[in-house]
Image 1 (tube, rainbow, N blue to C red):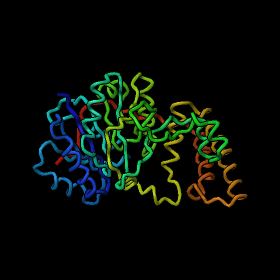
Image 2: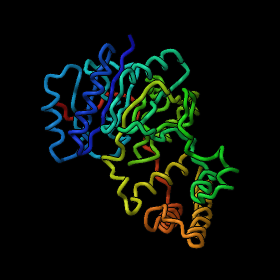
Image 3: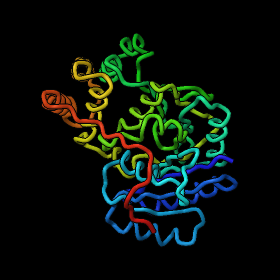
Image 4: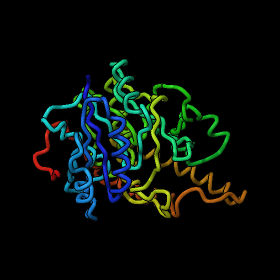
Length: 330
């Protein structure tokens, strides 16, 4: 039977992480593999609480990242650890600390990857506690998607419907460009080919970049409708309560465009977003529409990208699979 290493990244949400662990343990029953919880340097007692709670649980380890490098870097700690006997699993399963696998969800991802050896990544249908579907299926961002998303204007959206980043939640299993990383199973061979998460991204766009690298290497990403996972959403990041977009979001967005398409494309992408954003603001003024962006969003985007496009682009930091030399472990 193929083996799975499930990775749950914790940042200051130990109680919820333990709920996620309990659901993952239930769904890992009968499957080969282990679970590793990575505390992303919470410094709030999370590591000690999680270690004590996991004491004596079979196939469960709790480790300390030692440095909060963001979502990708934290998950890379678990990916590079491998199984406790030093061997590498056949699959890695990344699960958010605020996500709880429903019955049969992990096995459904495994079964799909086993039955389709040319598929690289498989992700779940994500829904809220009340059963409401979460939008986690996407196309890769582009200049045209920047215009469409910023303008929020029906005629533009209809004309660019095949460029729009969000894809309406599919009602059946299908290939997509990329999936949100709340519940994502990855084939080891893919990560051996393309490397792990790019740690230049602190938060956001890291899954987009990883799935794009996989697709370019011939490994598509598939949305598996029969795998269902309950998700709270934005618990660690606080995104739902942001009044202003944080610096790292702008950093990640710009790094995605410059890394994958070059600085000229990134410049055109921000210009497209500004044109769309100005059109939206004129409509807001004339039609009394409510605010849709965080405070000062367009100004912050222009200032950030203008300043950073004139400087040297950040180099990608893509580690390879392997064993970490030092990591705190319970």
